Length: 442
Image (cartoon, rainbow, N blue to C red; front, side):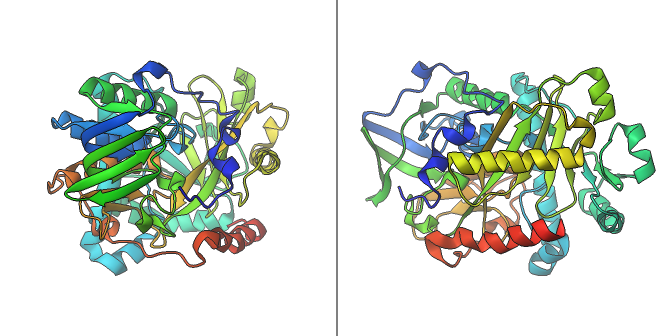
C-alpha cells in the first residue's frame, strides 16, 4: 500500500483524544482474515460506504466479506462531527447546471436529500439510538458580505431542494439561542446531527446480523484481476472474490487499485469537544438545538450535543505528526474562542482529526473502476460523508449486482474524475488555498 500522507496520519495518534471512542463490537466478531477465503463480494473499507454496500448486498442474499485495515468506523466515519446533511460536492449550483444541465442539477439535489433519508430510515428501521437532534442545519454569515450572499442564495436553495428556508437577521440570532460573532443566518429544514460512532456500530451490527463476515486488522495489500474474478492479499489471507468494492475514501492508497493513483486529495478535518457545559454557559454561548456551519470556504462547523457538550470543527493542516496535531488543536481552539468569546474559559479535553477526500472534479465518484471489470469504487464526499458516503454504498451495491439503481444516480457522480497534477506531492496544491483563506477569512 502506497499512501501519500505521513505514516502518523494512519496510526492511533490523530484519534487518541477522539470523543466518540472505539468500536463497541467485540473483537471476536471481527477476527483478522487468515488462510484461504472465498466470497462473492469483497468490500474493502468498513466506513459508511463499505458498511452500507456490504449490508445491501447481504440483504439481497449474497455472500459478502468486509475487510478493514483497522476496525469498522476507525477512519473518518467515527471521527467526524456527526452532520448528516446536504452536501458531498464542492461545486456551486450554477457550475453543476452548466456542466450537466438543469435536469442534472435536479438529479444531484435529489440524491442529496435521498442520502439523508437513507440514514434516517436505517436508524428508524433498526432502532439504532444515534443521539439525533436538529431540524435541518443553519448556515451562519461570518461577515456582512456573506449575509448578502445568503440572501441572494435563499431562493435558489428553496427551488433546488423544494423546501421553505428561514432567514434570520443578526438582531434575531440571540432569540434563537445563536450567540457568537455572526451577521445573520439561513436555516434549511433538511438533515440532523448524530453520534457517528453509534451510527457506524449500528451499521456493523446490522451487517453481522445479515450474514456479512467482517475482518478487522486486515489491510488489503493488493488486488489483482485473475481469470473471471479477483485475488486479494492481506497479511495472513488469500482471498478469491467474484467482485470487489473499494471504499477507503481519504484513507485510500495509490496502488489498491492502481487506478486510484492521484484521483483523490486527502485533507484533514479537526474537531474538538468541550467539557459538559453548565446551563448558564449554554445560555451565554449557543443554546440552539441546530447544527450549524459558517458560510465560508474553509468553514467552521459546530453543534450543541444532547448531553450538553459542544462540538466545534474546522478544516486545515498539511502535515501529520504529534507536533502538527498539537498546533492544529491550538489553531482550532483559537478559532473556537474567536467565534464564541464567552466560552474562552471552557476547557476542551477532546481534540482529534481525520482524513476526508476531494476529487479533481469537486464531486464524488461512484461507479465502476475503468479497465478493471467487476470492480467498483466510491469516494470524495468533500467533508459530507455521513449521508453521501452512506448513499454511495447503497449505489455501489446496486451497481455491483448489475442492477440499474432505483435511487437517483446523477451524472455528476457518474463522471470519472481526472488525476491531480504533482502525483504523490499533490497536497502541496492545497497550500495556496489555505494561505488565501487564512488571510481573507473566506
